[in-house]
Image (cartoon, rainbow, N blue to C red; front, side, top):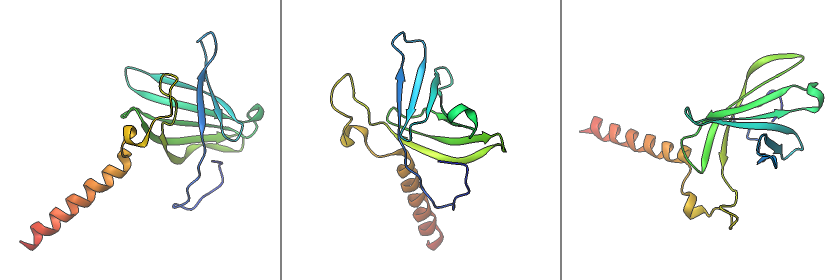
Length: 137
């Protein structure tokens, strides 16, 4: 995801691997495009953020942040800035946890279940259907 304008319906796909250093003191993020960053979780507020930094900071920085409401799914906003552009919200993101559980296999689709952003759409559709039947009655 870069700072260039996108159409409202465009979707970019990437991945990020979250790791801790051997001493456990630093949380590192490695992005699919080779970018590096850091991640953190504020446990009391359930706030999660990952930074995506560019070479020497010349092309700016992005912060992918949101709240943790589900063990397998995350969503939030992307804020970014560069030396030539001010800080602004440049997008939204949704993530699915694919990692290994306790050194075992990847998380299965059955264990993970349906993403909450798809369930919200189902609930809205149901409430619209109920409103339509109430109006007809």
